[in-house]
Length: 141
Image 1: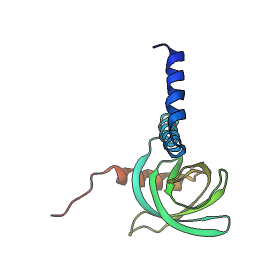
Image 2: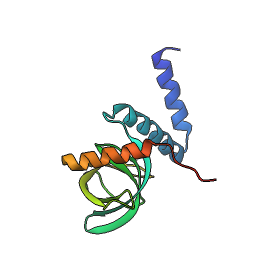
Image 3: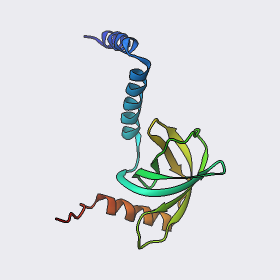
């Protein structure tokens, strides 16, 4: 099959899908493309986060983190470029800290947030969080 045939066949398959199936396919492919484009490593995590957008407060979980930003699980109604103030609580021993950012991506599962300029201290804290997220979890029997 040549490239034109691949594209034609793909369009046929996509056109035969329901709107929900097309949306799911789009989100899957978009996520794959975003992961390829990222400059910095992301670590999966589950960190409590309080955040404020447009004067409203929310509480959810960070699903992944890097020194560039986070992905926050949310069902809130946000727009790309919304300013967001995150208060991250990553450990019972450490005090929560605040980071400002903006929404750069929206999916059915949540929002991608790019941090505004980080201080050196904030960057070091995020690197520590990423290190802890990458460590094997201790299991009790």
